[in-house]
Length: 401
Image 1 (cartoon, rainbow, N blue to C red):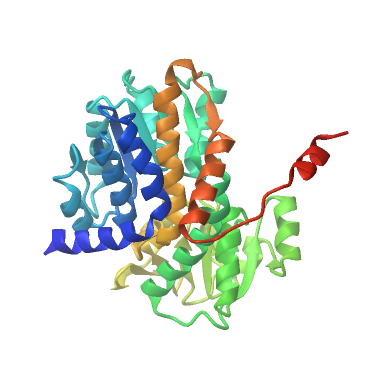
Image 2: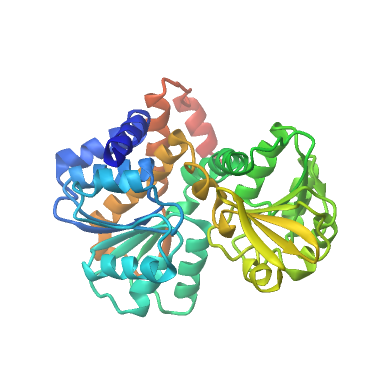
């Protein structure tokens, strides 16, 4: 039953991932990925399965592990297990099991890594995995980690920052996170957002999307920032902008979207009202200091799936999804059409590495602009959207001085 349900979800997603379907067909025909060993470390749900299967059908040997212990959907794992070289994942795996799964992927000596969060890339450097010729990184957090490797002179192979592709961050981080974070929050809590005062911490691409979608649901949104320019942007977008210590004492919920550590911590917990809900939309479970609540709360209990109540200083604080990515722990992640573009970028980035790895330097690089444009044009064509083209006169005018 599990595998059957998994296949139903995969087919539903595949029928709507038209861009990836079109772009992967040429790789199948050319055989460019035949025999390439790929370590795939992503959130394992139906859309990820579509990417993994497209790679396998194009001839790649795919070894799959999860990029988050609580984002795996076991029915999807059951469905694809016999279709890929190996799958190392289950929902709710321990930190030790999670790390071991990454090591098993790397033990297969992948030629390339497709990563989400940078754990596989950084582990391959720590453990001296010499087989890797290049990697693609999906997230802001992962790109920051790779950039730090490069800055330290430790990066050993080229890494394409898929996160920085226009067809990724403009849509995945904004529209994808915006919808899926609100979806996960609502599934976990089943509360009405209209009229609630919700704090969004961080106004990057993810924070923008989350704040806009919350406002669309009728929430009164407050934005907290450390970047002056982003604070101005939030202010001019019509949001209230306050320091977090001030906002935390007068809100119904806080959602973090920063990629940094201990963003919501003891000083904030102490001023929160009874019943405040805490959720995370950043990559790792470090933004809300759950360890502090674990150590200093008088009681703890799970009150509904993905909602844990901590009684702290006499007040009830509710943490969603153990402080992990709420859109994947409590929901299905980003909408299919958004991940169609993001996984198309991963697919083309991998193909680019395979075709050019011998001449690429061990640096962090953007997805080539022509591939970004190819994704956009393929997406528009697949969805029946037509656009204008410049005339020769207009092209000449723009190129003249």
